[in-house]
Image 1 (tube, rainbow, N blue to C red):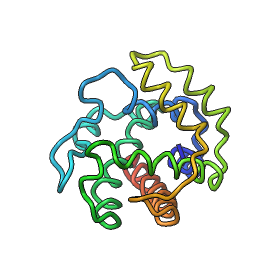
Image 2: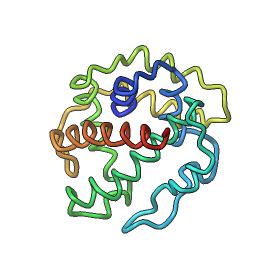
Image 3: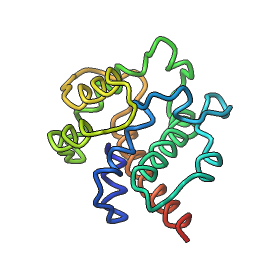
Length: 175
C-alpha cells in the first residue's frame, strides 16, 4: 500500500481501482495469481506474460502490474542485497518482520488506514475472503519488536526508491 500510494501520487492516479489492483495478486482466487517463473533464487512474477495483457487505462490492471513489479524487485534485489538467510519464506519466518514494520510504514508514509480498509472491502471479484481479512488485519496491527530480516530504514528507503522506479517504468511503457 505504501508503493501504491507513492506511485499514485507520482503519476497523479486518483483511482480506488488502482489501490485494489495493488492488493489483488495476494487475495484473488487464482492458482497462479503472480504468474511465477524461475528467478535467481525464488519464483518471481513473469512480467513479460503480464505485459502482453496489460491495458494501462484499466487502473485495476495497472495496480496488479505494480504489485507484481514490486514483488519481482523485492525478491530479486532487496532480499538478495539485504538478507543473508535466503530461506526466509520457509515456515513464513519473514511474516513476523512484516507485522513489525507495517505499523512504522503506515506512520512514516502517512497511510489513511480507515480509507484503505473501506476501499479494499469493496472488491467485487472472485477473491479469497480469508486472505482479504488477513491483509486488512495487517493494516490494523501495531506490533512492536525486533525484526530479524528487514531493517526498517533500508526497507522504507527501498519502498520509496522502487516506487519511483516503477513510476518511471509505467511512464516508459505508456509511450
